[in-house]
Image (cartoon, rainbow, N blue to C red; front, top):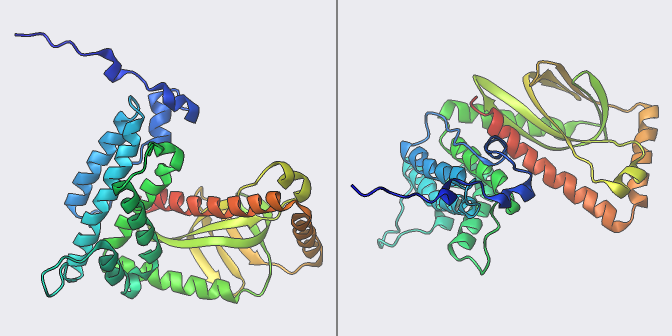
Length: 320
């Protein structure tokens, strides 16, 4: 029998990860391994094919370029996801002349139903990414540097939403509709919030989402805090929004209360107190005093970070 000599390079850590603050397998797994957290209604074929994505991600620890291949595989899996959902909704995959419908048209037909209309933008975005990955330009190795972790989490979130059972889907869409309507009616330009036993002045609700968490719906809020010493701070830093997951909630006129993910009490109230209005006006005046590049950088960063936070909290807490 011939003894196989295995080159040890196949087992070595790829030092390219060091630029992303990865120095061990544990850190890599925690920061870059995006497990397929799918609920029981997701078709087995999707679960099995995403497992290949997981293998590619895991072995990217030894060869960083594999991380980009993991994302490419995920983009190709989008075709399977859309076609399986179309079949479930009894949407024909072909025209009457026998020609196959393209991905763009299938997405439009799926999202023409009220319960899935909210996915139109996200699915179209993934479709365009998929097309780019199918026709890559020179030097397309940019995997983890292009924030593929958030994209992979978003993919898992979309799949879970597409295949959720009808009762839960109706609960999500009805709650989301009611929440949007109530928030739109709030008669204040700013809020006060109680989060983790600390009080904050809040300029705006940047984004919100209803998710299914265990046995009931939960709310995600991404909030823009009103900063003190805004001019000094934003001249040097960008700042981050506040992210919260709320369970056992009630939504009333000008008030949302509930329980934070760590069990502490949460309140979001509209506020018109004179002393707080002065703080709000100072914050807004300080933003206007900033150089254009600093103000634009702050606004773009906080909105982008809000999007990433919605994706992350949905991935972490849905169906756990």
